[in-house]
Image (cartoon, rainbow, N blue to C red; front, side):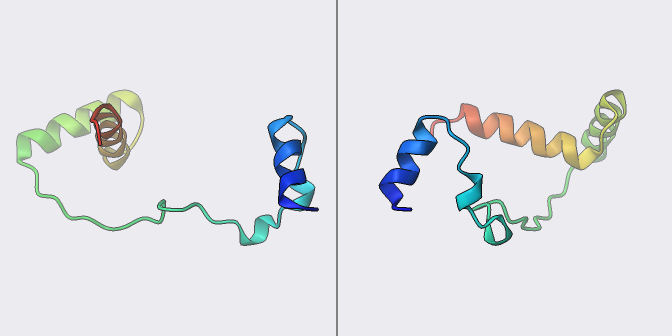
Length: 75
């Protein structure tokens, strides 16, 4: 199938998954990278309380909050 045909089917909302090799699919720029950050104790305590309230990990709270802030920021 030509790319133009694939694009037309996709834009029309048709299922194009039969023409994709999902075993080789990658999510660009989503590979995790480790970053070390030092927080004051009071901040870690607050993060832990919020994580407990939400029933998620501290890391999840940090990721969501930073992600929200970055989306608000004009890049």
